[in-house]
Amino acid sequence: MTAAPTSSIAVLSTLALRGVLVAVADEFRRSTGLSVDPVYRSTNMSLELVAKGMTADVAILAREAIADLVRDCVIAPGTTADLASSGIGIAVRAGAATPDISTPDALRRTLLAARSIAFSRVGLSGVHFGEVIEKLGIAEEVRRKAHIGDQFVGEVAARGDAEIAVQQISELKAVAGIDIVGPLPEAVQKTSVFTAGVFRAAANPGGAATLIAWLADPRLERVITGTGLQR
Image (cartoon, rainbow, N blue to C red; front, side, top):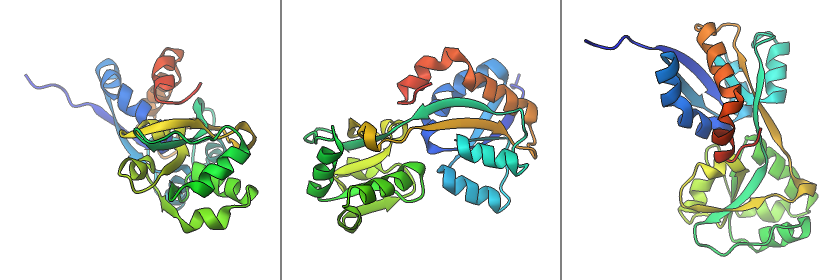
């Protein structure tokens, strides 16, 4: 006897929640009979895709982006829920010396001393890091030795192609072969809240609502924190 096919939920998600979705996918399918079909992009790249006509059942993006999509009648009002938050962190290749990033001045010295630095091009962390290096007065020096990408930049450090990787802590934690040094100093930190919502054009709005409720349930606290996020 063959099992009945499961209904699929199309999800457009920020990379920051990838670890959570991977961790809960099997249990969610066993409990609900629903499978998750995710596409992972940065919040800014996701907004570009939506502007070009892309849709799904669920969007999981930065809270401000979801609010804009509700305003633009892309996400249905009354369907949104905050899921988790994350700060931006610094990582190095596993086993490498741990640099001092305890204060803005220490971070500045560390960034100037590093031979290469990886950060994202259009992700929230990369955009903010661009503002940080401007504020620290070292933007030109950092960009000259930067590896800039759109996926998990921790992988660049894991390969040894960059001494330092800068990204959301939850995104760094998803990468093997690196050590997370810690968060950016509070004075230059930015914490992002990630929110889910149901697309107005969702093919499976019921499944979408079920997934959002599942992810927002307090019982997922340990999974959330285990991936480097916070409630």
